[in-house]
Image 1 (spheres, helix red, strand yellow):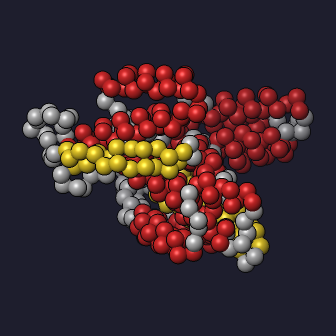
Image 2 (tube, rainbow, N blue to C red):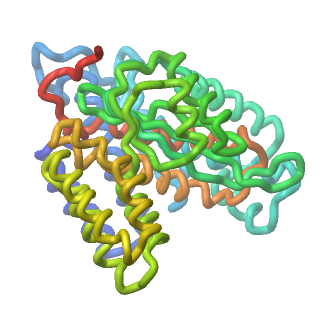
Image 3 (cartoon, helix red, strand yellow):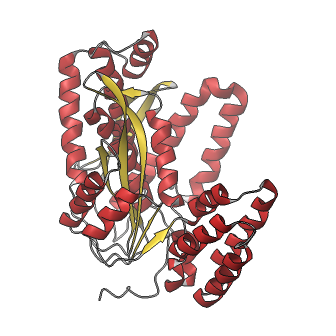
Length: 394
């Protein structure tokens, strides 16, 4: 939440004084100030006017505050939630926080109810939930969240010129056995330059059948206008992408190509030089120069590292597709860094659970995290990319 410029300095000073005097023991008090200020700022934008301000843009009236206690990991925080006369306003920062927190609580509560908990899990449940967990409470909360999350995962999509695809694994209990299940994620950049999480799914693996089903679901929801896919190299994903979105160019993640190259370097003292040669290819100003440098590198390793030479000739062109796209976009579409940062955030939230009791529980928490992140992206002032004009849809 972005606060008004005139209040930011005062709030920062007040929070700094609190933390300086009381350290992390007063972190809850600092959070209270920040959240209350953010909610006020959001109400002002909703109403189109500050308190007591008379403007033509005003769309409603403030109506005081409602006390609310929010349970967090730093204790209970008393809040003053701004109200409006039309009763339609509710701060988004509370909505998003509640969704992800509730999903986390449910994942742990399900572990407790299914008898797979430990003393540590029971302690976490008590700390996070703040109440004795019953099956009816879990069922009710699950139904509420699942309805919300399903609607978000099935929402209509539009034109996204750039689409990033990636997967990570979570431990899930399936039929009494703990297995690694794949979390498939798609992130898109629209012609407005804004990022959005397009979809997420929990599957048994990254096999073609699962990737194909995931991509088909995106297509059925209206995803179109794709000019480039960005992903790592994976046989299942590659086959599914070609089957569902045939003809769409693919950019292989340059970072992973650099890592993969090291497996073909026969001597340790050659690694730095090989990495420099590959960087030169990828950082070339245009396709012609990149191809010249690639040809030179392939030839230079034909005798000293023939397997590397063969690999470079076959694989590096897969990381050079970006030269057909605007130069100002290349830094953002040359790797899967965009979606990998999202995966790190997912990992940060899911490691609290460790082992999910079922796939539905995993999907619930992952959806909460990516939905929250996607909403934050869409509210950013600056675009992730800028387009001078709409990309050709021919």
